[in-house]
Length: 109
Image (cartoon, rainbow, N blue to C red; front, side):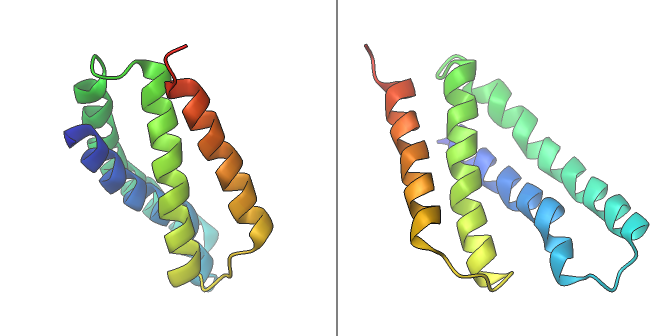
């Protein structure tokens, strides 16, 4: 669970670094880039330990898959609550297909 918790925290920071500036279009681009880099540094402080701790319990393919799913879940919440963008059926269907990919990757064939 440490790995999952650290990945969730890292994705909260990364989602904000990548998309948070969309609500601050009055801030100049170079400032947004520097601020985003600073936030991304914090994200790396959680992502790197998550992968280091998780590797062995999960292989690299599984770690990446877990990270992507967490990233999508965090993004959905961020887009709805922070960016105030609606969820459409085709977005959910696309994410469901990604969930199917998770099943395929984690299934012991």
